[in-house]
Length: 457
Image (cartoon, helix red, strand yellow):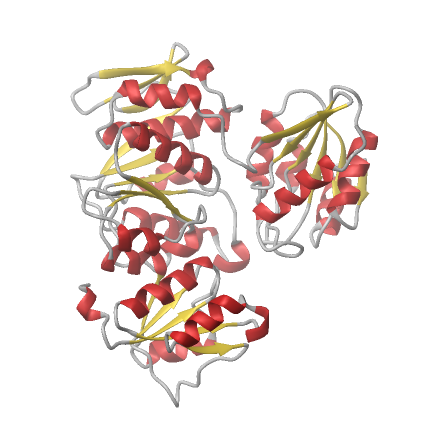
């Protein structure tokens, strides 16, 4: 799509979170007749954003939807989390509107080379780590996408040499049509967002869009140890680069004699670094490191640069983030643990006994495997949010009854501190989204840290 194809088009941007606001502003700048829609009332949205829209002649439908009989759009740009099945979206589609998303539009109207990283868990850590490797290699790099920076904002400022290292969610990928990264990656696939996607098949299909336009000259990095991911790779037209922490490979990234190594198409082996040199804990982070190493290597970055960053990278905020130790009790913030599988990995990564704080918005997940993963490590579980009754019922059915339900985060932290013994960890890893009590997992994690800071030392 040329920028001239946007000029004069009637475009409705749906959802006024960060990516929606960025898309509306970018499309307006390109000369489109832009309209915005949000389920919130006008007064509930950021007043500066609304005022800026009005100055730019961007019409808003706040807490209402446009009538398809009165106005027909050329294009609808859906923010992540907006279901395409909404009636007014379907009505516009039937009248010929293209249904797309911010990631796709960013790719069409902006510049830059894309690395796209998706998967149920590990996206933020792997995307951040990959971005650090690209920066250390001296490449002009922007880390964007589901990680919090709208892709379109960066792509509009990018040039042909800019690398856009992109965390791509299933919501962003379900609306792509032309998007084509140089390197794509699928880290794993476990049940998540089933309240939206309905089935694992639909969820997997959205994730598979990350490589759908790639050719043999491009690379798709995939978790060989994860059977659903490996199965998806069978339909990929790109060069498939497997990574594994369990087996030795003739091609791909793997662990050999305790070392992270990569074998290329010629059978040449690049020794990266020792697996025990990583600063980020847990087997899941070894997988994230293998993925980042493979992505970077096949994007042409030297093994020495990759090794340098792997040895120094200490992780990302809200993902197994050490907060404080008070009277011998450690506090760890894993607010990014928004589904059961992610929280299982957190429980496995923590050594010693723990008090687990869990619960939040229900995305249609089941919690049996989380409870089964306790393995005697979890002394007590403190629950909050909408899923508290569901998790409690599952736990008690499975014979775990050391459970307290709390009304808010402050109560969770205080109770966790009371229950913990010296040497224990109080771990916030909710296994659920934050949307019942917080606007995002970052806000939840910050509140946890504030509550820890408020404890008597």
